[in-house]
Image (tube, rainbow, N blue to C red; front, top):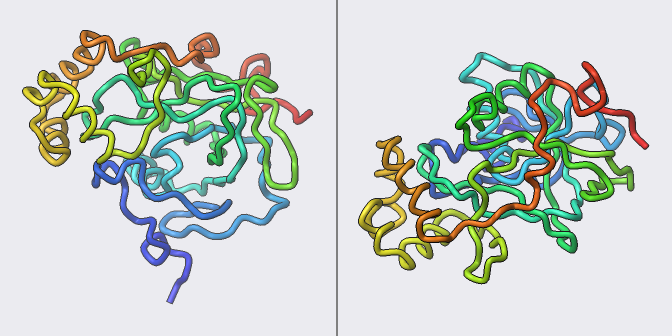
Length: 266
């Protein structure tokens, strides 16, 4: 029996196929995603200078979701996933309804927040696939790719190495706030949808009264998702993430590095 398959590890269900389980199950520690297997990553293989470091705050930290996205394009190359300690951002709620059936996560500026999050190291082909899945190349796409620099965002790897910055996806619609104007954190899909539906009669008219109804209707109707996104703004539930200034002109390399995917460590 192979102890490193996603099935054996309990990591095989992608949020794209099980929206109420968004953001999906994350690995317990740093690992290498290689097809259907997730094998431990040695501590001397946590930095990959030839690849782009992408901070995953939602389902991009789910091995099953990554496998799903790559399989759609026939990509089978491995992806290193490194568990890090991140200071300066927290995990918020995107101010849009995804046609995958969920309301996804998006980072927001939080100087005092410290979170354990994964950095996934992507080659140029893999990065282009994830960019496309987030709508980065589209003028009306839901996300822009940002370069979050140190020291504003501190990303520390096991062993104490810090990165000079990371890519991350910032929602172009903004993030939902907590009622006081401050960005709220993402509690998990079922809890979030329950709360949002209880709090808005207009949202219930569009998506039903239960999380299950919300998912079923959202997955079936792109225009309905757009209506839900507009409703968030109309009901004044939306605030800026504070990270908009870091969204870059989209390119393969990190800012200031030419064709390189990753600037030198410092």
